Length: 500
Ligand code: FAD
Ligand code: MLT
Ligand code: ZN
Image (cartoon, rainbow, N blue to C red; front, top):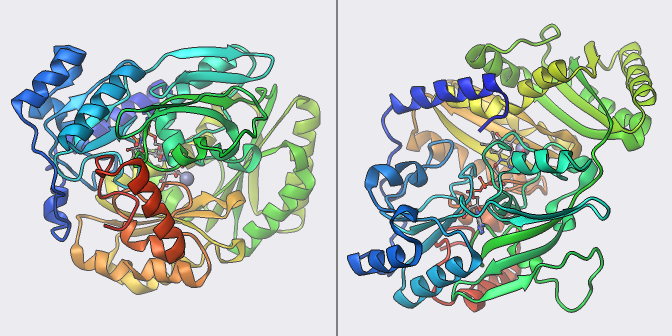
């Protein structure tokens, strides 16, 4: 999951920690109101077809081999699929889907399985279509900055390959070591640099996808400008595997900056975060490439569970601000001047600025590894909310007051530059009564504040009943019409995204 050696060691300890724990409850038992659709049950004949198509090694059907594909990253949902398929080509994906459509077998597309809303694993026994073996880079054009690759390429590996050509991916997230570009596109992933490079709807130039009936849709344009007809690629960006399986993508990649600096600040109040963000936009201007925040609980969790060290004293809030550009001296001077200014004006109480790669990595770890660290708390109720910037942190004190001793930790961190907060409520074990205290309350508050119940993680399995808090009935009806048109037998990722 994570890039460097110490991250790999930490992941191993996380795996050991979890393998000593009991498996998460099956989704069908935890959510008994959801009934299995009228799909076929996998038979030996179906399996034989898949083995004939892919060969024995690319069809997993031993329950122990299928287990990790049935459980999501945060161990919140668990399906019981007995079949994982690993196609290597678009044609194989097409044959799998047309067979499944004809035989009414439900399918769950899966990339790196790092999704945080339960969308990437089956709810019941859906066949898992894993893109892990579709991982070839097809071309990188260092003049236009256009990358063409298969959907199963790991984000971090793309980053490395592009780096050799002086380019970079326009997105970066803590899961980069495991998530796959097809998963990123299918979730319209946001991440740490969206403030600078915008979201994938802008950066994806083309998509090749396979519809539920096996038809291949080739929208693999490498052109920056192409206004011929409807922009079909957008149907697949962010539709979380419900409208088609993404098999190839074309991404417009920016130039890799030659100068990079990072600051870590301690602040006394959320108002000071807002003022510092405003000043960062004005004073850092075009070199601002990331603006993140975390509260004391979030920093505590990485200090406690991962033994990471903070370079500054303790404060109620922290910010991570990154600059990137092409003139090291100029950028560093600008960031140092900014730090002096915000400290001189009492907005930032303590801070450090660095451009040393090791020190920058250590600061990023404090922010990026919160998700991983929180899992040691036990079970996580996880929320990914967009809010008007002034209300960004407002849900956290409300949840603390509402839940009292029911929660062991309530933490808030996220992409302040994009108005996207991650609210995480830790408890030792999943409890239905705690869930009822949180939902739909948290979504009602979000809706009252005119926010979105999913900023970047998507709707997946856990949020379809709440989509109406952020979308009008007419919009939901249009989504249902599109789904019916593109997947009339509803075989693609059922029970996800749309209310069922
Ligand atoms: P999966 O988890 O395998 O799948 C996600 C969804 O996409 C599922 O609905 C699945 O069915 C569908 N899907 C996957 N591949 C395809 C395909 N080829 N065709 C059609 N559908 C497909 N997300 C953010 O937005 N921003 C962040 O900053 C961020 N940080 C994270 C940090 C950590 C530590 C972790 C664990 C997760 C983070 N995430 C973040 C969530 C997650 O990494 C992203 O949603 C990511 O884009 C998922 O990619 P994946 O390959 O793992 O997809
Ligand atoms: C993040 O910003 O760290 C991710 O979206 C993951 C999370 O919400 O935990
Ligand atoms: Zn995030």
